[in-house]
View 1 (cartoon, rainbow, N blue to C red):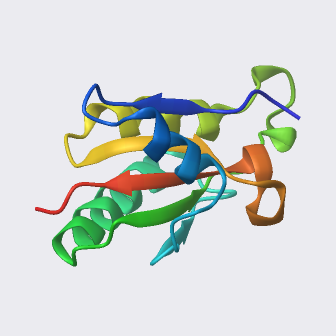
View 2: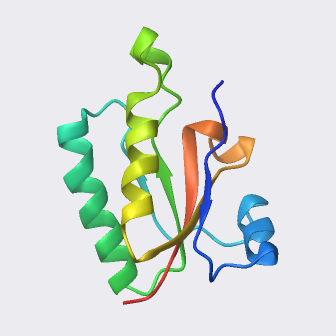
Length: 114
C-alpha cells in the first residue's frame, strides 16, 4: 500500500518522532486532499498549514490518499505532499499515520507556531 512517509528537521528529537508516529499528539485540525488535482491541492494545503500555524496548532493531519487511483503513475498527490511539506519552515516534522487514522494515505504534521 505504498511506503510510509517520514521527515523531521534537525531540531526534532527521536522521542518526539516516536510520539508523533504513535499518534501521541492530539490532531487539532485536518484537511482531506484526496481526489484533488495538484493545482487544486497545493493552494489549499498552503492555506491550511499557514492558518493552523497561526492558530497555534501543534499537530494536524493531512489526508492525501494512497494513490490507488493514479494507476501506473504511482501516488501523485502523496509524493507532491511529501515534497511541499519539506519546503515550509513551519513544518517541523511529518510521518505517515497509524492505520486507524489512514495509514500510508495520510500524515501527522508537527507545526511550529508563527
